[in-house]
Length: 225
Image (tube, rainbow, N blue to C red; front, top):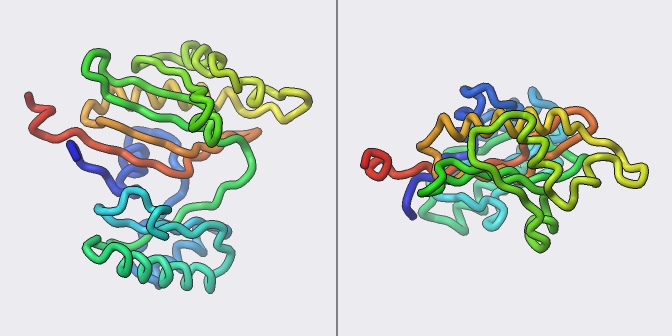
């Protein structure tokens, strides 16, 4: 692997320091902290393993969703950490990430890639099957303003699903275009980011929320060339 992946708490911390809207989250090094922080954030919550060696957390049983009580949170911590210790014995288990459980709204994908020729570029599309099968995405070179973000959003074939197609809910496109333009500036100002994947991002009638994030940093030696 040519680069270093940040843990998910590190991803949110980096984005928060740049003023990007991130979900409430807490890094919890033990079961007691996981239960306490779950209660503070407010149920239902999602709990995820935090380990530098584990990038695809769901693939190894490192995620529990829709936890609704202290008891469920405590059992989830035990289940996650024991399963990871069994499946990935060489992985360093730092603890778990606790964050709100999001439901409803429209799933989106927002990503970034540092291109050798164009520099930082941003990808946007609808999540799930729209991305995986239909490849319904649009791209821009960073940075760009809110007007360009609106053009980007309108380019995808699934745009009617965001704008109230056949009596459906009109989602908060204003917040989406604000976020995309702000995120483009973040990527432009962080050339050390080689790849970033926000998937999914939930867009609601009011506001949006990031539900998962992965960031790959470029090697220090490569950046200094």
